[in-house]
Amino acid sequence: MNLNTITEIKQPRSAGEIRHWRDGYAWLAGGTWLFSEPQIHTDTLIDLETLGWQAIAAGQDGIELAATCKIAELYAFQPSTEWSAGSLIGECCRAFLSSFKIWNEATIGGNIVMSLPAGPMISLTVALEGIYTLLPRDGPPREVRAADFVTGNHTNILQPGELLRSIHLPAAALAKSFAFRRSELTHLGRSSVLLIGTRRKPDGGLALMITAATVKPVQLAFDGTPSSEQLRNAIDTAIPDSLYLADVHGSPAHRRHLTYYYAEQIRQELEA
Ligand SMILES: Cc1cc2nc3c(=O)[nH]c(=O)nc-3n(C[C@H](O)[C@H](O)[C@H](O)COP(=O)(O)OP(=O)(O)OC[C@H]3O[C@@H](n4cnc5c(N)ncnc54)[C@H](O)[C@@H]3O)c2cc1C
Image (cartoon, rainbow, N blue to C red):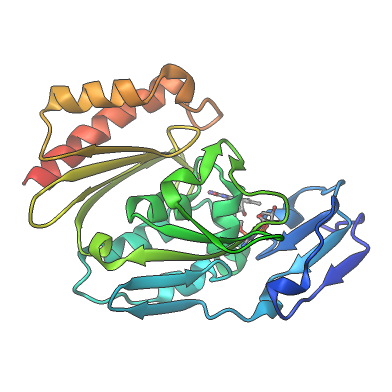
């Protein structure tokens, strides 16, 4: 849609060019959300594309993703076959309510900063123990764990004007084995529940990450394989009823039921 409140589009060559932040400014990534509804409080868009950040770099220590990397670019990327969890990337790219436009224009950073419960790039980066680099307007870069970034439905820890620069996925997490489960009400629809389990080698510690069912990501970690009962108790302790999301894609009771169901499937799959 046309955004008729916009009076200026800035195209900086470096993030440092935008020193002073004010109400009315917004970073523009793929624009798939920004242009999907009126932005009555925004008068200036600051285009991130002109920063020219390299989309993806893979090395011995893992994968570095620019926030401006598009979902389609990430999907086309072939991670090393030594990284068993590399195929989680494709699973999460497909976990989108995604039209042609969203698929080709939406960015990883835009998806993370939206901080929606069904944000598949949040699921991916939390499950793979991602570290985000953030660029505040008035201080040095800071790093945060992906698991600590989202604070609620459409809320996160970013300060005004702070920019998500990149996401590091460590090689140790990429080398884990994984199990993936997702529910959607319609084909290629928005996720109502998305669970990813990962298992460390060689000691076998199991981690379970719950998204879409809850308003923010929930992580559970076990030294070995928990029993069914231990797993269910851990879910109940970590997720009070108020943390389950209620929307047209599912009631909290429906989401809680599927969380138990998929968690048990993941437990059995990773134990085997
Ligand atoms: C029909 C439809 C279906 C959708 N389905 C889903 C879905 O299934 N799951 C889902 O999670 N989302 C969904 N969305 C929402 C949105 O399109 C996606 O979250 C998308 O990934 C946003 O990325 P973008 O690059 O287009 O962000 P933009 O629209 O450009 O920006 C989104 C927000 O993030 C800010 N921002 C962007 N990049 C940065 C950065 N690097 N640092 C700081 N701030 C930044 C922008 O200022 C803006 O506030 C959907 C939207 C539509 C219209």
